[in-house]
Length: 144
Image (cartoon, rainbow, N blue to C red; front, side):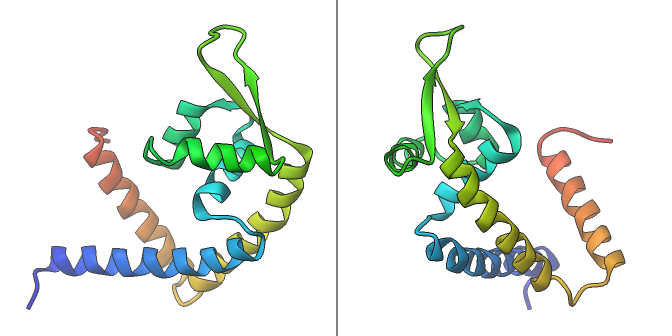
């Protein structure tokens, strides 16, 4: 029998993978990848950001970001603006077309995620959120 910690890890992986598969089904209806959705969602909710800020926000590897941004730019969902403070950097800005798209996709994805978690009580969801935050804070050296 596996240790409790391994059971937790396996359970977390299975849950995240299942949710990701459900989200990917929605994104594919709009011809988006998960990475493209993440970039548009970050810009939609947080406003203009540098490429590095977006990368940090969506927890993406540096190798995939340029391709994601290029593809979104080609499709007219975002534009790059020169950073007036640092000419080496550019600022990503979501276009009206990108806002319209994410305004359709995001609510559907959010509703699906909420639906997937309906078998838990509100108390169980709150408890899980607290435990995961505690774990994340401890891993990042942020003790209470």
